[in-house]
Image (cartoon, rainbow, N blue to C red):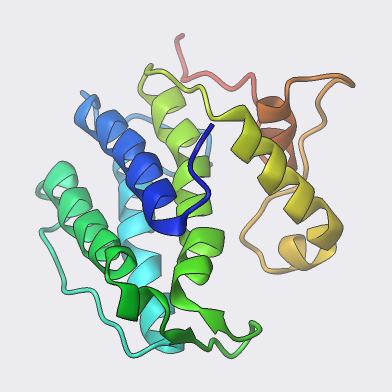
Length: 191
């Protein structure tokens, strides 16, 4: 079970993702996200969050190494900067005001939008590169329960593909993956 505290949860989730990044041997490997390679998964996480953070707060993440040159160093620099915000009580409690979201403190906003994204993309990277793709069942269930009531909003955002049907009684991880538009049975070509 993952910690509930946003700083502690990010540390664990980002650390697990870092382990998967460290284990990649083919950065051009296709992933369950159509037209994305393993490198693109890291590029996505390093790329979308800094502008999102800046648009809702006065906080900035300094640019790090290039994902093209060194995905692991890029991830490490990025995640260390996010963790520093979460570990700073003043920053964590600072307001986050995004034009399309209700106002909230920064730490819960990071947890809800960013850490959850890292968590789900861990499966993409792991599955694409033949690594351990098991996700924490409790967090899978929490995310699924939180997203199902806003399914139309999520699908309308363009960030999630159509739901992939999974069998009744499927494990919660498979149900979450199907909900976000992933085929839980996806395997890289040739495997």
